Each structure stands twice: as C-alpha cells, then as structure tokens.
Length: 481
Image 1 (tube, rainbow, N blue to C red):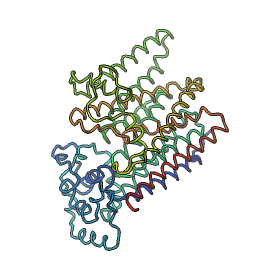
Image 2 (cartoon, rainbow, N blue to C red):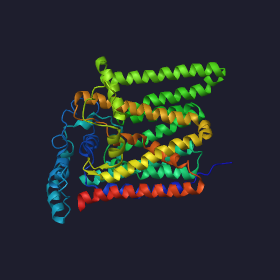
Image 3 (cartoon, one colour):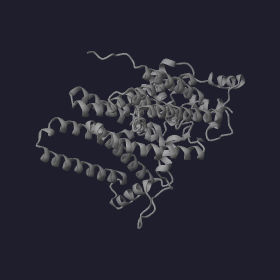
C-alpha cells in the first residue's frame, strides 16, 4: 500500500502559524538589531558584491567593531543616517520612520557608488565558515534594491529555514512516537513558538542555517540507526554534518554523536550476530571506552592540553549544574549556572539581551519546567516497554544531547581562560537541540490518559503561544511604544 504524500493537516496548520510568526518577527525588529547582525550582513555583502569569500583568509577578522571601517560604507551610512546605531543598547531610542527621516537617509544613500558596497575591511564574523553566507547571498542578489531590501530579503529566507526546522521536528517526533499525530503536533508547535528561536532565526546570522541542519542531522542519525547504514543514508548524514560544520564552528560538537550513531548502526547490523552474553560484554566495553575517550578529549580540548587546568574544567562543569563540593575552588569567570542558560537565556532574553521576561514569569516558567521534567521521568517509566522497542533511537538522542552540551561547555571553559569576564555559553546555543525540546514536551504529556492528555496538550499549546506573543509584545514595545 502506497503511503500518502499529502501534507498532514496538523503539520500544515503548524507551518502556517510558523510562517506568520516568523514574518512578524522578521519585519517588526529594525534592521541590524540582532546579535552581531551587522557583522553577519557584512560577510554576505562581501561575497555578493566583492565576489570574494573572506574565510579563512587571516587579513579579515582583525577588526572586531561592527561599524565602519569593519563594514561597508553603505552599511555605515545606514548605521548613521537611518538612526540604527543609536538604537543598540539604548532603550530610550526609537527607530527613525517618518517621511523626513527616510528622505535624509535616501539623500545620503544616493551619494554612494557600487564601490561603497565592497569596502568593508572585515570583522570577527569573517572568521566564520562560509556556507550560510553563501546561501544568504542568493536572496541578497535576488532582492537587489536598497540596503534594507536586501537585508530583509535575507530575513525572509531565514523564515523558510525556520519552516524547515519545524518540519524536521515533526519527522523526528514521528520516528520516536510511531507517527502519532498528537505528539508530532505538540513537538512541532512547541518548536515553532519558542520565542528565543523566533528572535534568533529571523536575523541575519549563521545560526539560522545551523539550527535546521542540526535538526536534519538528528533525523538522519535516527534513520541510520533504525534502518541501517545504507549508502544513501550514510552519505546524506555525512554531507549534512559537514555542511553544518562549515556553517558554524559549534557544529563540530555533532561529530562524536554522528560517529556514535554510525557505530550503533553497524553494531546492530553485524555485532548483534554475536552470542548474547559475549556480545553485551564487548559492546559495553567498546561504548564505555568511547564515552571515556570523548570525555578526556573534551577536557583536553577545553584546556588546550594544559593539564594543570583539566581539574578546573571538571570543577567548573560540576558547579554549573550542582552545588559546590567541599574542597572545590570557585570556578573562573562570573557566577554562571544552568539557570542562567537553560531558563533565563533560553526562554526569556531577546534583541541583544535588551529585552527580558520579568522574573515572576520566569519563576512560573521554572515551576512548569520542573513539573514537566517529573512527568517526563514518570512517562519514561510508564512507557518503558514502548521505549525498549525504540531504545536505539532514545539512546542516540540522549547521547547526542549529552555530547553536544559537553562540547559547548568545553568551548565556554576555553573562552573563560582567555577572558574570565565572558562565559560565552548562552541560551541561543541550545537552539541546536530545539527539536529535542519539542519532543521532551510531547513525551511529558504522554504520561497522561487520553482525554486528560488532550486537554493538557491544548493547555500547553496555548501556553507556548501566549509565551511567544508576550515576547513579541515586549520586543515591539521596546522599539515602538
């Protein structure tokens, strides 16, 4: 029997909501107000107008400021004459949007020549790999027109990447929940309405491509584990992982989980033929040695092989999640814990950290998360038989989450060794795993019986919708109230 190729109505509905929300976020926030958006736009412009790819040439990236001369004269003109620079970090400033304001900018912009698009000298963003910027150069070229036409064209392109992320979450949830539409819908909608995701992905940033590529890697890993390492799936997974690594350096943390998935798939194909007891012993030794090796390599990479700092890394990691033990020294850098990253920055910080949810809302959200985590554990126990049937998928996703977080911590600790004032690790880095966030919400709801689950699912969807609307309202009020 042939499977229908029609788009499921729940997915279509979620994608329509995603499109509306994404476009609203893309056009509501003034140009160049995203995190490092000016530097990222300068990279795209360098490719499209100067016809050169900055990475990995060392002469670029020497200048770290996001204003002239690190960006083109055209962008510097927009910073000044369109009133964009005073907006950054100044909550009292509002966009210039009257007819007279437009005429002032247009008068200065009319003086520019094509060479004024090509003269950016480079910023820190020029050290990034080029895949996102190459792809963003396509809508940049198609749009043409003014500086703002091209920038907002890239933002609209990013909204399409958001749609891809939601669709991949739907597919991934289908593999875990046996294509049960209610769970797929909850997982996809939770991702579609995650406010920090909307704020991040609708700006000019390589994270906009990194997030769907990571979602694709997660989905392909699951397919490889479930269906076996066929040539087609293996090639797709390898190419997608490489593309992610050449989009943003954080994607290097995906390499160990991908290798784990390949190892598990090959073990299922060939190692499972071993006698049961010896097979378990061999697999246990191999996987245990692999985990230890990854942990050791992560610690060494975090300290750049400064053995005297290895203990400090593990102390920092422990105190990030758990209370300080007797004899432990204080970790380097500011007081920065899981609450700051997983709650404050993952749910409630927007527009270059200028807009935040009130503490009372975050405290309530924390209570909801705690209840959800308890429900998730109960649900895992209650449905242990079903999970046992999909244990390879569950283990693969859990290992991916743990190893990727370990790589992010290693990068953060290394940065702290150079600059103890900046912990680097922030909530938007967790967006690489945002499909798992949606799946965790759906799994927590699975503990409830049928009618109660339907009501709770509706309440959760209403809650994430209100959370997104609240964030959007705060951002709009920041710029236009």
